[in-house]
Length: 239
Image (cartoon, rainbow, N blue to C red; front, side, top):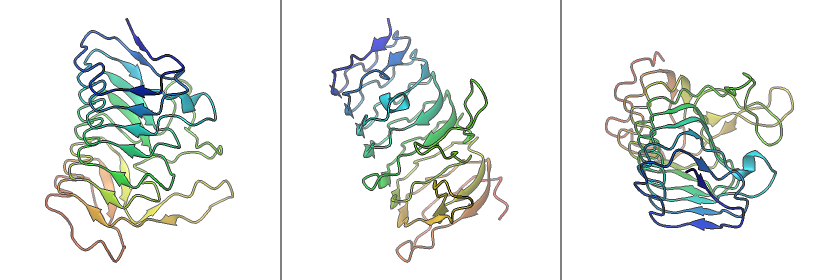
């Protein structure tokens, strides 16, 4: 039967459903009290399919704040987008490593606490395209203020570090990769882009991302090293 998380549950603990290989789906959308998904909570739930939808998708309320290391690692049948709650503060190492069925985009939170995209967070998510349209009706995904979410990998403004192999082999992530500026979700016409402050990018962070068409490195004075194999195999980058 599905893993339906009740409305009053605030935390899913360490390895709570790890290796439950027959669970067909997960429903946390109605878990309005849920704030923590623990380490390896759903790791290797290989049959669990469908969209991972948080309570923030249906109500303007606080939702999950912490996703632990390996929380959904190897959940290969999860599909569609990863639209994280606006109040999410952290994602753990290898949290979505090997989620090969994800085939939409990643919408990161833009709050002041979300500053790190950790090691192997999305490694081997080979199906992610960065195309931010709803599969049901073809409309664009939107931020909470109603502005459209652009296509591509959109790094949130407060991120200072991208870990090693964070996006390793995300081979279908399309369009340009801008690590110096990020779109401004303000609703006024043509708002100026926001400057990022990325200070470090780990080894092989974007290795194997073959579909990126352009690359802009961080201009931060604290970004001083292009790491080993950081952009290895980015064969689509032209400028």
